[in-house]
Length: 221
Image (cartoon, rainbow, N blue to C red; front, side, top):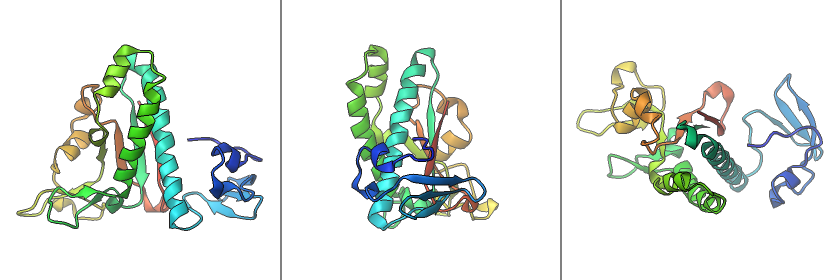
């Protein structure tokens, strides 16, 4: 992710994305109400998106892409020291990551999961050309895009059904430690999660409603 200051031009910072051509220059940053005002008069608050569905989807895709790039750079630095890097995405709805609208009890990938896998493949392929460390290259080559992300949500296991990711509103008595392996890995088996032998490096978790309907991300190690 990029940090922008006053007078920063989003068109230049995004390498010329057409969506930012209309005077998306930072005119004011106000910490009192967590807002940013641009020269074109648009004022946005923390967690707010502007534009139609296509622009919103593009913004989220760019966020995913930049987080993957930041992750790989950091990972490359720390791999030789045996330190694993984890990156966390905060999202607005569980259904954007995992859908349960078919016959499959295990669900299928939602919008963000598909975006992630597409961007991961593209970014990792470009990043491989920069790698001069055979050991790290072998590590990167050994991880599949579908295996390196998981959800960090509440779990609902109903009688006769597989466990499912759900929004964090269910009664505590309904929650169990299985959806399986994903829930156990993230909530209980921290030692395994932090091992370089475990392919999961990117986690998706719901954002607090007070923060707003958004996707944001951060990398930790």
